[in-house]
Image 1 (tube, one colour):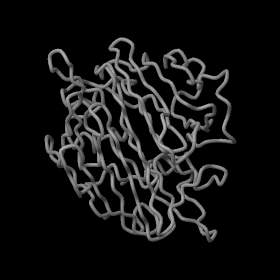
Image 2 (tube, one colour; image 1 turned 90 degrees about the vertical axis):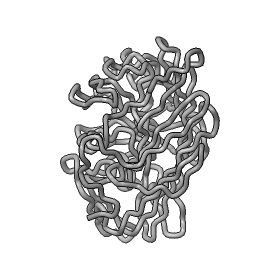
Image 3 (cartoon, helix red, strand yellow; image 1 turned 90 degrees about the horizontal axis):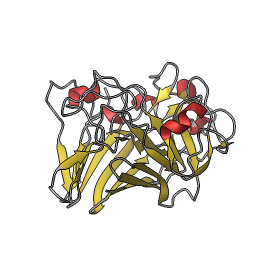
Image 4 (cartoon, rainbow, N blue to C red; image 1 turned 135 degrees about the vertical axis):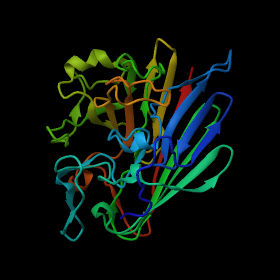
Length: 341
């Protein structure tokens, strides 16, 4: 059994949770999956709160779903074709499959299902830590990861993810938060406006594995270079929305990569990342049996996941940005969300 494996909790039981607060927002994060469990925007007039990050009732509910709601995914977020790759010596490394023959978001017992420890904590920050032993989900080497949430300003939340490994290993970690800026999770989020700083996207096969070279977004339903209503582009996106966008700018540089906005509530999020790609996923597997902390049933398309990361299946695609972490190196990915009302 992998280290920090979580046994099935009883209904209502939760791993340790930490609240980070400012005058404009209260963020709730959990040691289960280093998970974002809520982002509560405060109304300046009456002090009331509106949660805009999809959450579930308790840890039992989080472990009983495969939508990765709010979690940090690892060792490798997104998909690896055939659950295998060739290492630097030309040897096949086989990983645990959990989506047919595909390895998704780190496998059936990925980091989203682990109990992370709290390594450090202050009024504005909390650092979660996790050790993944050699052979975990098939990966080589012992990997040590941290995920640090920090309120760096009244309306700005940072997630810094780091990892080291004592053997060469592909690493690609992200936050799988879902957003609905209306705060009404029983209603669709497809009426939101989305803008992505990307001129190219990756088409996929029926297993959602990227095929061929990146494609120009011009004239497709995947053109979000200007703020566009998601529902408007759906008819011109025959594959739906579960795709990687190849971001402009330099990998390793923290830069603005996307903006999500809701005209009805006048709320918006600006998203920043140091990574090369952004997976945009309009929830398709939510259902009314899945309920929030307030027992609100989730609409099928009630959440939008914007997951900064390197490209899917990169261990098998030398033409993609490299996912390889070598001994002595430190993987580092910074994500920031700026909330506006």
